[in-house]
Amino acid sequence: MFVIGNFLGALATLVDFALSAYMWVIIGRAIISWVNADPYNPIVRFLHEITEPALSRIRRLVPIFGGGLDLSPMILILALIFLRSFLVPTLQHLARSMG
Image (cartoon, rainbow, N blue to C red; front, top):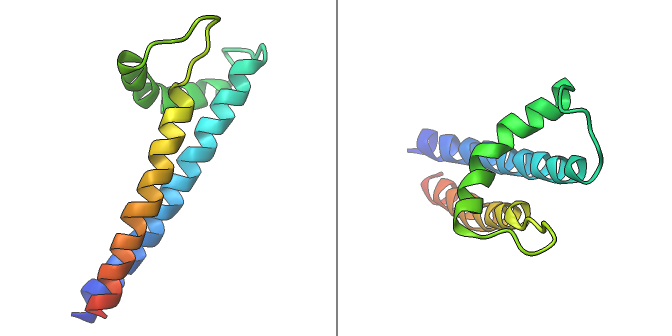
């Protein structure tokens, strides 16, 4: 049973890292949107391609406010923070209970 506990502990660590990294990618995308970045730059294209699927889903639900204020990155960051504070501790607790 300790093997499953170790697996869940490792999974919790990976999920925490992935959610944290994606949050920083979202922040990078938001910062790049404030400046006139070259849309053909490979980094800009990567940030756009990796974040646009999630952001476009949020934009369908939440309208863009007057003046072009897009709240979808902030909403996605809040969702990622929620997942990090709920999912990761839950997996860690399960890992400890099985270990």
